Image (cartoon, rainbow, N blue to C red):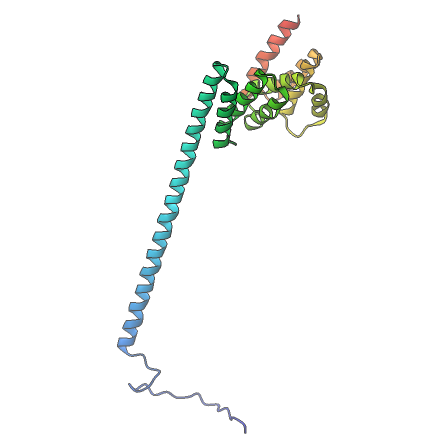
Length: 222
């Protein structure tokens, strides 16, 4: 048995009994349902937006609170350091780092922790903290100076000098290179390296500190 396909389009009566005719009541119901869905969607969007905003505000508050607490622990560590309570100072500086580990401002926490380890004679333990301070705030000359001195105290200045003689990954490495030359007795070479850096980077904040250091070293070596 085959089904014959007619070329004529089917004809539908538009009377009230036709199932294909949309009654006024049905149309109104559909519009009402559409408006209800729109209101529900808008309400859901507003709820999500409010919750998201509250999360952002909460995160910002927690971040600010953590940073403030970090400063408090750092200051407490400095008080312990003055009282020669080194274990307490180390603990406080470490808490400060844990609360705010990777901002430029937290470089001082690493620096203070490194200095505390040096004070009690743990030069190798201090090294990574001085290195971290330099990486977080590469425009503060005192960090480079302390790191170079630490390399010498740790007995690795010669090794680090060889490393930085060929490490050109950062222009700031030349600062450490110049200081390491000075720490290993090659003062004139170190001054030349630092002076060249100042000539090329004269507009950097760190440059003035380097120039002052060069002037001091030059006068001391005369």
